[in-house]
Length: 554
RNA sequence: CGGGACGUAGCUCAGCCUGGUAGAGCGCUGCCUUUGGGUGGCAGAAGCCGCAGGUUCGAAUCCUGCCGUCCCGACCA
Image (cartoon, rainbow, N blue to C red; front, side, top):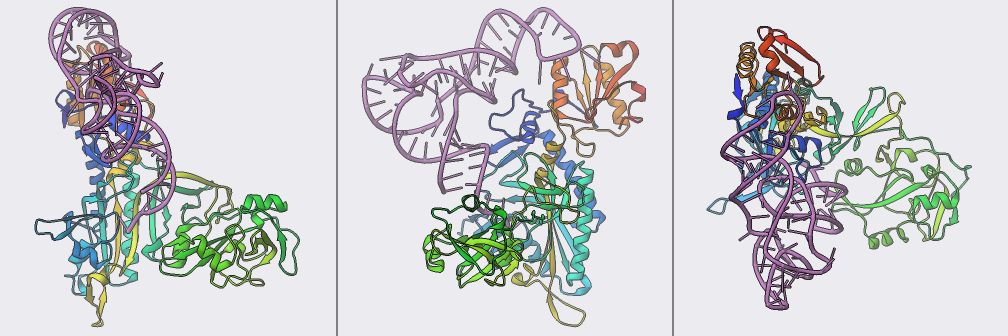
């Protein structure tokens, strides 16, 4: 196929858009791939939509390969479905009404709709099922950002699996995990599969696919030896051991006037801040004050604590703290506190300095088990100077883009929506579900983040808008056309730049748009019948006869 | 929702402090020039100076309110 640039809408820009920060945002706008309509709302221009469709195509092929069936559900959905699953109150949901005042929701994902259809499944003989569609999602994001990276409306490939039991779900989950690896590989991405914290979604498994990129919103933790990868929220780095003071037989009060921070405390007592503990009173939704205890040099991992509490939480108010501890923030500790204490694993052994629950005082030599009772759990945030939990190597923390997320949902949706089947033993059971999402637009942005240089984008071959960009310089229009035809005959998609522009402009645009091959026909070609073939990613260039084009030029 | 910045031609911006009726570069149109890395020249078209109110003889400029966009944070099925 040959498209002529003179006929296409390819509005490239010389300047970066004023409000762009991320490389992908700048380059996709400058290259004429996308334009903004409003915050978080984007139109894909012809070039951009070609790339989007390439990504979609890869997804379709890999979904087909695992037996997932494509279908198509509406974006507009009745509010009733969302009330049943208790997602109607989510602040991210766009709500609207029809002319009769009936409430509707613009789907932000399609668990409800697909599960609604799955209620028609009656027998274990119909299982398992895997369904997916590529459909628009609308989310009332509080803060869209970075071009395509965080938007309010986008196309998502979302699949849903329905199984008899957990064992079946394991199989469906595994199939998707493998398919996702193939998809992101084919997109030319560097990425890591990591276990994500399921948080409120429940304790079951959930994997994230993270692509390292400057513009990313997630923090990815990897090991220098490549044997560990995790999302920061869920990472379990190994902290350095504290330098403890000499042990005491019992806790000992020490006056610490005006000291309310860990740094201040460590300095005042001339001790290692890792040998202190930090008390953070929180209140779970609808509950009473719980004390979260982490090491002084650590930060509380909110996601992890949420998992332990099985509930969202907020910091306790000053009044609640006074009532529960008899002291104010900065002097709090576990001894004497009557409520639930959740302490980080790092506090299980050793003697720490803790707040004395008396303003201006701390306790030395506080030991878990001996001096206070606590539940132990991993509730600390991994730090850059932690070491790898599997090999002890150095950890690398970098920002990354979430390309896709796969969840084991279990019966979270099938129970409220009544999606049950009759099992072999004649009992009625809820379908055991998984859901699996990829945003092609975000994948596209991630590809640009990872494949660009000063001049523009360098698309990997499977997602490029065109395989070859033929630049016709003045006088060599004829030979450029022949070159384009030869490439077309070899099965490549060709963009023929036949516009009446200077060579420099055409080269600059070709670099920006980033097709893998750039073929230039100019005056020299008139003499020897050869054209320049340049590889966008490597910069390698060779002169080839037009008759040789397409033979090995991929 | 909290903090910050910005809003002037299609794009990138100057002008605003110190009020006097609109500018540049790029792009666009026509002609000439040039033709392997955004060429040079001539002539043009193009602006509700985000919106509304106020102050003033007079507001892009000062004041108030609103709207929009971006960045940081909170949030993120």
